[in-house]
Image 1 (tube, rainbow, N blue to C red):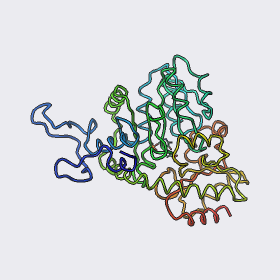
Image 2 (cartoon, rainbow, N blue to C red):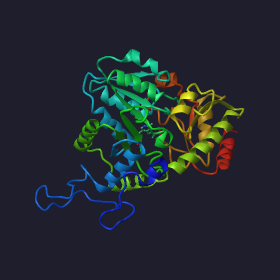
Image 3 (tube, rainbow, N blue to C red):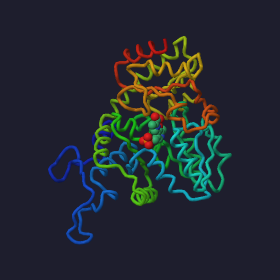
Image 4 (cartoon, protein in one colour):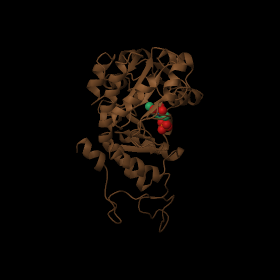
Length: 379
Ligand code: P1T
């Protein structure tokens, strides 16, 4: 099955009870048994739920994996990965990543005795110097949030395989429409399904997809034992979102390109971070591992100060100033004070998250309206 067919049919069966084309929302915590253990495959909804299973099968299908797991948020999904580790283990992570992931790693898991090395991964060869016999996980986000750096997944996977270390890729910004980390050698794909997979800014959810049965079994154990699952209604919403992922992503990419080009030619704009530009440092890797360049763009103005950036996001009317991304509607954000405020100023500035940085999640509205809105806000 090809991708556009998979997003609609992958892993799906018509409901066995009445042939419903969409899986019913099985809003139940438990399932009747005729005798202890005498059930139809479902015992308790923390462990399994038919609506969540339908979604998990779809997730596995669209990422070219064998097993999908859905969680109550993206961070809950990352938390499940971290629970594969034990005190003394080491993780090598990209130094440009979602602020909440950084906070989980440093404020929770460092306290449990796990050591993190945050490094630039734009050159995959940088990683090898940090690998020791304690290294158990490499954490990659690509494109990175919010600097839109590109990490060569295949090159990193060669290093992770050589040293027998797990490679997890946060595929939230790209989605499987643009890139499939498992095909490039990753062991675990992670999503904040809150974003493009859900696609409509109406649900918070996380997902993991793997190929290996043993790894899947360990993660299913953690999912059930720790219990950070998502509910059936949210599972239904994300499954519905996935069915239009391909056409939404196509428009996000078209609009993203037009806006990146508008910004780069605007006299008041200093830097535009978008992997589709030929002079983006890792453009050639983006071109080879992604189908297109996505709808996320970050930029700074020549005024280069906090107040100027805040004025722009306040003036925007079609773009809504809000946390999150990946929905059909365009959003703006100020990473330094919003999504990345949990990263100390000197750390975030090292990777470019300066006070004047603005991040756009370009939606699927008419691009002329989006450009006119940016034009009036930048002034
Ligand atoms: O918000 P949640 O569903 O828990 O997902 C966390 C997460 C993980 N990884 C990436 C790359 C993310 O962007 C996020 C969430 N990010 C935002 C809310 C944001 O506005 O950047």
